[in-house]
Each structure stands twice: as structure tokens, then as C-alpha cells.
Length: 332
Figure: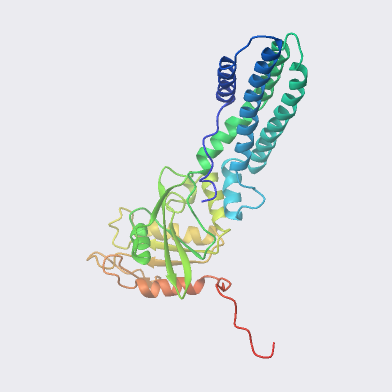
């Protein structure tokens, strides 16, 4: 996932403590026996602190991906959760600070060399570096918070996608596991306290992504917050359709009327192709709703293959990808 490589972002206090502590140790390792060695020791102190600050700030900038080049899905989520403009501004400020400290330290090296009191310009340089770092303290905090949020985003790929919706305990996760024949990835999703399940299946050399999104599509619209609504907008960036599962046996704890109401709300509110399927046909209390075409059981496997075929037929066909060069025709 594109945000995995972002390491912990230090605070301004942590950066300054690291830089100045190292510079003091550098001075302690020097033998000072005259004006020249004193200048060299102060120069080493300055360069050590400046390089640590400049390099660390430069590394922060490189860890974050270019937000002009990331997939639209992740761009939208980042904008919802953090604000892309705010992130860009913070990264630009950090880049400026890195370059400013690098340039300024070289200027102060010239002031230190040959100076009878080299500690004076070195202390002045330390003061200016501290001011620069303190000026971006809020930017570092924002980047640190962004890092903690973005690293928790699920690894959702730009592939044909089936989003599984419905009330809790209707069999959404069981469906994901049944059609992917693998233990789905469990990923923390910042819009809810729950996680999401992501599974993949392959059909005719095309990989499909199956996403169970608890907390996004499993409760009435009146209880949904603005962030959740925006999250579904972000999901539209994928080539996605929605499978709405209901449980006519009502063993999920919700009556069928409430489940159907939610299904119809989803279809009315979101411009994403969708289909409703009834799960738990293996249960004695199961009663088929008249309007539902697809009946399945994630326990026995009944109807799952037919449902998957229907879902795939509703998805846009991706462009074919060629792993090998096409053969060269005679005469060309």
C-alpha cells in the first residue's frame, strides 16, 4: 500500500534534541589546543546539527507519495481524512526548512572560520536553526497525525470491485470468504471502529476485489455521518458495484422490513450498480421475499456461483493486459 513506507514523524522538540545532542558529542570528541582547533570543533558542531536537521526533514518529504500521482481513490480518502491541500502545504514548509537550514549552515561556516570567538556565530546559527524548526512544529504534528491515519487505510486496488453491503450478521464476511477461497485481509478503516475485509478472486484471468464494508453501508441513512457518505463517494472511484445481502430468516437480529428498507435506501442514494441477494437459505425459518431473484447460502454454497456470474457480468470489463509481445506477422 502506498502509505506503508511512511515512518514515524518526529516532533520539532525531538528533532532539535537529536541534532544538538549529537553536536555536543561531536565537540566532546575533539581535542582543543588552540584557536584553529577551537574553530574546527565549532564548525563540526554546526555541521553535525545542521546535517541531522536538514537530512531528517528531507527524508520526511521523500516518504510521502506525490499526491498528484496517487490513485484517485486514495486521493479522495486522503482529502476526506486530512486535506490534501493542508498536507501539501505542510510538506512544502518542511522542504523549505530543510533547504534553509542547509544553506544557512554553510553561511555560518564562513563566519566561524578564523573567528577568535567561534562559539558566538555557532550559537547564533543554533538559535536560527531552532527558530526554523519551531516555525514548522505544527506542520510536523500534522504530518505525524496524517501518517498514523494513512497507514491504516486498507490496501484497496484499482481493480473491478464488488462492495458487499447489508446489516450486521447477514453473512457479508462469510460471502467474502466463500468466493475468495482464502482468509481475507483484515484492514482497519478510519471511518468506523470496525475493520473491513478484503478478498480477491480470479475469473478468466481477471482479478476481482471483494470488499466487506461494515459501518459504511450497514445502517440507516439517518444514522450515517458526513464522513461515511464521503467515503462511499471515494469508493465510486473504483470500478465497483454493490451486493446488498439480506437475511430473511431474521437470525441476524433485524427484521426483514428494516433490511429491505436499507437495501432500497442504498439503491436510491448511491449511483452505483447494485443487486440484492437473500442469504441463509439453509435455515428452516428462511422465507424467500418475492422481489429477490438470487437466493444463496454461504453455508451450503447454494446459489453462490450463479450470483458471482451475475455480479461479474455487471462489472465493466478491464482493458486486456499483455505480458508478452504479440507475434511478428510475416511480411512486416
